[in-house]
Amino acid sequence: MSEREKAKRPMSPRRKRYLTAIGLSGLIGIIMGAWSQVDNFDEHARFALLNNSPLTPSFAIGASILWIVGLIVCLFIYHRAVDDHEERAYLWAGLAAWYTFVLSAPTWWVLHRADLAPPVDTMLLFLGAMLVNCAVWLWLKYR
Amino acid sequence: MNNKLKVLRAMRNWSQAELADRLDVSRQAVNAIETGKYDPSLPLAFKLARLFEMPIEEIFDDEFEGSNNV
Image (cartoon, rainbow over all chains, first blue to last red; front, side, top):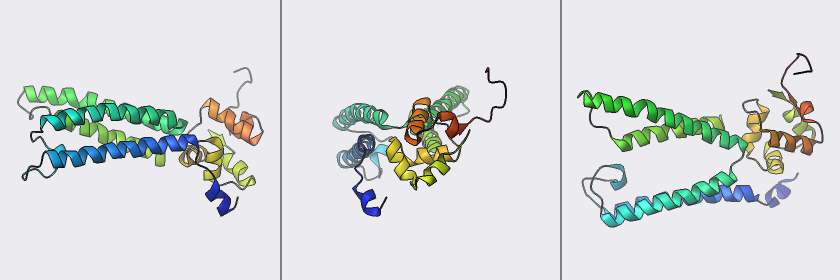
């Protein structure tokens, strides 16, 4: 197949859906990040979404709705677009993230109750699980 | 599981991306199957068999040498 023919090859509906899901989730992230900066500007906290500073109710409600509705829509499109290989990577990554949570949350909670650790931080647990999820997904998809 | 995907693809002078397009999967999926890092699902194996016009067991080899009854 020549380069011209390759260039002419139309994008499959599956790939279109896949790119739509990725693009939409990126757009939601950009909107939330920009909105949080505009609505919650605190000169001591550079990134409002990445710290525990207070948020305005309007942003909190809007961001919650955007997160839940936007994520459900993106995931619906994504799961209709992924192939076998990526679905497997997604499922194993999700399981690894779940195990990260199962191992770390009770451990931290018990240690805190014995005054051996600071209070449990939900967002740190979430971030840890997401990092593991991302690492496993990337490894299984691109190794 | 061993497979002849790379050879069959080369015989048709297809790139991984071209084969991926014909199968409607990602290029990474084709690469993972070719390198034996991922065994395709049964529907994808059938799709490959139809595309290359040969039985699944001629494309994939599970290296089983026991009785044919199993």
